[in-house]
Structures are given as structure tokens and as C-alpha cells.
Image 1 (cartoon, rainbow, N blue to C red):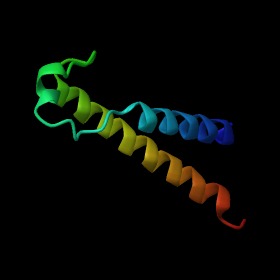
Image 2: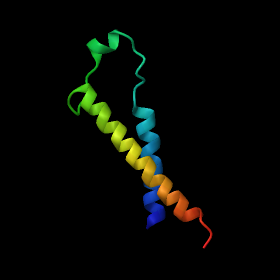
Image 3: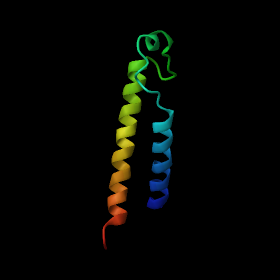
Length: 69
């Protein structure tokens, strides 16, 4: 069951990283920036927190599965 959760975390992290837009749009990004989660700053903060939480969970499971028993 934990290996299935580990696989889902892996896939979800890859998708989140590919979906995220780069932040180097210059001044034009201010006029065209819109997100479904509310204001751009809160959406970006939520995605950052979600990404870091999933990375932490992934590493915890990776350490658990790779330790010699």
C-alpha cells in the first residue's frame, strides 16, 4: 500500500512541476496572470507549499523503502 502511495506521489510531483509556469515573464506577466485558486500570489504560495509537502513525503517513503531491514 505504501509503494502505491509512493508511486502516486511520484507522478503527482512530476505533473505539478511540469504544469507550473516560469516566473520570468517580465512586466507583461502582471497583466495576463490569472489563476483558478484566487489571487496569483496565494495560488503560487499554495502550490509551493503543496509541492514541498509532497517532496518531503516522497523522500520519507524513499528512505523507508531503501533502508536495509
